[in-house]
Length: 442
Image (cartoon, rainbow, N blue to C red; front, side):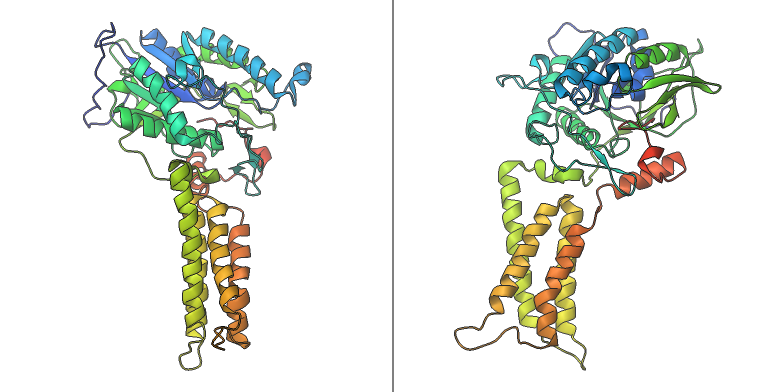
């Protein structure tokens, strides 16, 4: 397969375990059962055929997936029953692909030593008004997106320590299409790979020219690659399709004149990917994530300090604006204009930076609280917010700005993902029915 002309990243050093230095060890990390086959089924089967040691880690059991066939209707709305069913589905799919080492994150073989085992639940998602995935309003406390970022990284690091992979494969920075669990998996894998010094390869939708070995098969595997890797899955396509057929609760394999395709719960039909592409991520990419995942990286203390700082920043902006809002220049209300612009910039900046409304709410409370407090007559008889047009503009303006900024549906987090998806697919989705349910062909 094709690689860039840059030197390949050096594989991580072998440990004292009895492993040959030339043995390829690839760790593939996904969010839910069936993601691994949809996005990387050809990669997994090809690596197994090439004699590589392959480990697949699935972070949740997909408890919130939609159940398609009516004969499995008893699983609908029953999270535990669906989780057990999907465990059986992925076991069957792994057997078809030939993967002998599959682990659920949080179980004994994929858990920080000394911590009790746990199950990370599916966080779920909803379709936003713009046709993009958004987090559900009431995320379960045991959900993958509710767990401490550090805990998840530590669990995956335990797998890395055990497997000693020469490469880790997972989602790109947008998680493929923006599902909160997918996005978080990217962040976790990027951080874990960075700490462990293991090359990270992101699933992409791009293409590069194919190179083949003298025997006609694609040459190379991810740990030996530079910037881009292509897996031609023609020889293993039927195995990938049979593995997909194991996921009867989630997808339906249909035969079309153009080849096998997948039908998803919302009715979308996408061709089964024959060629799978990946890129080497030299450094983790900064991004904003749904539900303040960036904040989660800070830990409880960091989040507490951030919340406190946002409240203080809002109070400071409120005090400065109160002092300056009556200033005019040639009749133009320069003071009130700048003060309101500062408030808008503060709240918009916090929403974009943290991908969370809560930080913005605290900043808005700081602004409104201080303005309200300073609008009261002072003990000296001074009135800082007089009852004139500028005073009323400053008294109520921050409230209007806060309602607008904090009520705006999406800021920053998924815009880049939407733009990247449109760029890859060449069209813009118009509604949730245009998209596969919680799955994306990549």
